[in-house]
Amino acid sequence: MIRLLALRELRSLFSMPSTWFVLAVLQFIFAWFFLARLDAFLEIQPQLAQVANAPGVTASIAAPLFNVIALLLMMLVPMFTMRLIAEERRNQTLTLLLSSPLSSAQIVLGKFFGLMLFLMVLMATTPMMLYTLQLGTSLDHGLLWSNVLGLVLLSACYAALGLYISALTSQPIIAAIGALAVLLGLWLADIGSSALDSPWHQLSPLNHFQNFNYGLLDSGDAAYFVLFSAVFLLLAMKRLNNNRVYG
Image 1 (cartoon, rainbow, N blue to C red):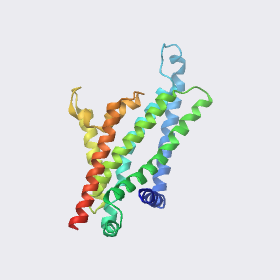
Image 2: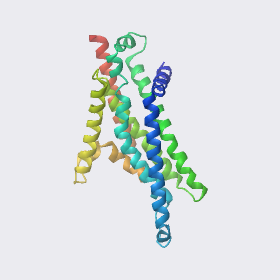
Image 3: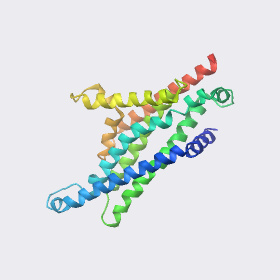
């Protein structure tokens, strides 16, 4: 049932014209930044050739591109999560969904995995675009796929948080603003904290993404992403359970 609900959400996303517009705009931004970084790398390549242990094409082009995508997803994912439950509540179809044989966990996970499938389709063009560089040079596959893994885990955090906030309200716009405010707040608190041992660094998803961006696979960062996503998914399930019990 989770699979069927996930596929339903995926079809729903792709049936909206606004989704295709956002996809087109994002692909344009990704391609523009990719070509800009490539042009800058080609300009300084003669100087890099004279430097020992100079950064390669993957570190110079792919890593900054994934950093930009991580920031864009922070602003984009709330636009998609806002409708997952809030719109169902506003359209009064949530009651029908809750009265179905589906459990709250199945509803939340179905919507979560449906959105994650969509986000993975959105992100799939990035490694494909970067692999065109292999026609003229060699790539650091470890660094590339470390970034892909980090971006998937980061997107899961964004999606779980947005899904929970969407479960709190019947207004999709409020859900989007709420999720964006929390994510921006965590990010701004992170970059505004000068102390290396500040707890804000540990709370920010983007800070934990940085190790993946550098090609470092840290189990602590992976555990943070899993726990962050699990906590907000469980909170969303509890919220739906309360709706079921108290109407």
